[in-house]
Image (cartoon, rainbow, N blue to C red; front, side, top):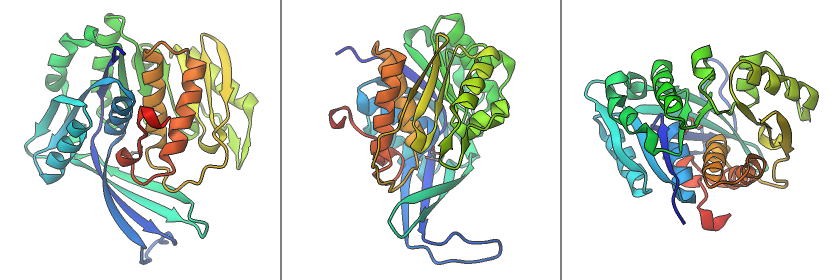
Amino acid sequence: MLKPKILVAGSLNMDMIFETKVMPQQGQTVMGSLFRKAAGGKGANQAVQMARLGAAVVMLGKLGRDNMGKELLDIISSEGVDTGRIVFDEMVSTGCAAILLEKNDQGSAENRIIVTPGANMTLCSNDIAGVKKDIADFKMVVLQNEIPAAVNEEIAMAAKAEGVPVMLNPAPSSHISEKLLKTLQYIAPNEHELYDLTGVRVREGDRLDEESLRKAVVFLHKKGAENVIVTLGSAGAAILYKNEYLYSPAVKGVKVVDPTGAGDSFIGAFCFSVCMGIEPGKAMEFANRTAAMTVTRHGAIPAMPFYNEM
Ligand code: RIB
């Protein structure tokens, strides 16, 4: 099998995970039940997911010159991700995320995440000059919103100029310029990011409003992105591809032990599949299955499924 070569330009974070049965209110201290540390960051998560499925992944990103940076670099390279394009900031520390994992009595979990981006946000034009020269070597470029928007724009423009498809996972939500939107072959927000980008709510509690969903994806397509994918958690995913709308429900009966990284698993699996020549509707179904497996395990990177598990 020829491995598709994919570039991920994005974040690397050390995730500090606090498990608790009770979320603290303002001014309140609560006792948690467990602490875990795991490699994460949306960029690194997506890179590892694609590498575990069989892609040749090059990661571009920035770490601090500290223990967390060293640990993350070791973990990512032990996953077979090419870390030759990762650079270091001598002054600013490695990105870090506080993840509050709220467990209910049945053992299912929901999370809340605070990211302090650190060195991820000092990635600059100088750091990407080398990779821009080689951009034509890649089958796809994958971006998120945890590095500076100007860097995303510069990489996306370089990729577009060479005819390399660009995927943007606009997470966490932030402003996306028209210039960037017009370079995108794929944009893949979740329902909250979709709301921030379009003002359209597509879910009320458990009820998915498919008519609003269709309107929102068409709106985003008209703003410039060629194809639009929306991840909807327990409600599955939808895609507007070449003006055709397709919906895929989530895998049923999954016990959510830790939802962290499920969206990244989806993006990684979708991009890998499309690069392998699988048509986007089927790629979305496969990505739903990898995301469903991810939520049954702890942590982001440790939870990403391998190809032979699927
Ligand atoms: O998408 C999950 C990721 O978001 C975590 O790994 C955390 O680091 C934040 O980037």
